[in-house]
View 1: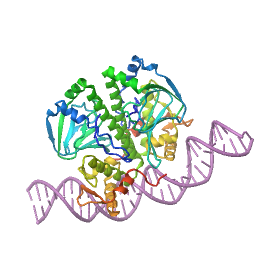
View 2: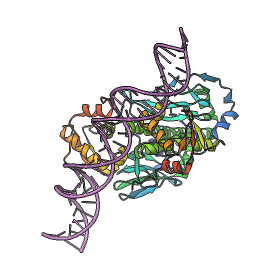
View 3: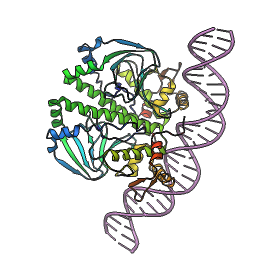
View 4: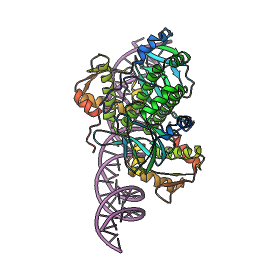
Length: 237
Length: 237
DNA sequence: GCAGTTATGTGACAGTGTGTAACAACATTG
DNA sequence: CAATGTTGTTACACACTGTCACATAACTGC
């Protein structure tokens, strides 16, 4: 499996941030695995498909990767996004989802063989990788929560707040975020349609919760209210 | 994290069954970890809560366990069910969800310390455990798909077909299933209300897809149609 | 510049599922 | 046996979101 997205999305409750957990990144460096080739991949390129045998572990350097599944009838679901610093392709040898870029992306490609060698030599390294997968599972659980129990407003707020917290964790301002992906990707991630996403952005703007000069830059005007929304503290119950 | 539910639920596409993967079970036996105490737990008892430090790995012997999360305002989401043969509590040291019994349940409790000792002594054992977590991640992804893209009919069909396939994988008949949990658990698992679940059962019965003498026994009358529904081969797109 | 394509925003309307409620079936208890 | 509680079922009005249609904006290549 797969993805890992260290400081992962979905945090409706946002009580606890996923572990920095990137303890694995320095370990990769220490092992000289960084010598692996850096790949420059155009937007909308497929890295792998569900069911593929995995060939590489990727570390995202710049850009963004989208992890998704597609139903037989064509309906698509976005499971996660991976941003710079995130590792994708950990987990099992058979990919549990598709992966494609949503931007011009630079990736560090570590062959699976080299990765496995490193794990065999250093149990602690394997343990760190396992923790990453466990974090991805926790993130997936949170995604289930967001999609099954939150309203459109709450889902978008949850998405934006996760990006905000990620910024914060990386030493950037939590008061604004960049959206590298298109509306359709956001919609498929949140289990909504692009029209609903669009309308919800507008609603947030009209309510004074956010400001948007460009389509892909969101400035937060009322972080507290957005966080309450994201946490699912709504009226119900 | 956590759960593992070997032959896990959610298989809308059902193209591939999760690995038997229970390769780990015989390994547990070989290590004498089976000597661990068997616990008999009443219905509706909590095994652990989200955020708890995990103390044991559990192997379900009889009964059924429900893995869930709860939002601040009380809304609950069921993430997975664990049935006899399934292992729960693998993954990280901090529980990513609540776990409670939905029946009188017998569990084999393996202290985490003993489990970790076994992993340290035998890397292959740890590898098998990791595969279990990776399978759980894949199952969680599938759950996201089911909840975000399938209709109420398709969701219930997906749930029933997953149980049917589980029966099949265990050498039982795929033509009927037992529902150990209550309607509310099913509803919270599928992201629906208990009324909708109830109505959908009735619709299935009226359409001749299933027969139900008792509330917790479902006999399939048209497996092909149910499987098509579960796969999300609906009209959309 | 202009046409053509892609991405996004907005509006009217319908449909699915929700929520409330009342009711039925069954078990447990006094 | 009546009383109470739990679980499951059914009915109906309403709200949210999806669908469909079209408008607008941004970017492309010519």
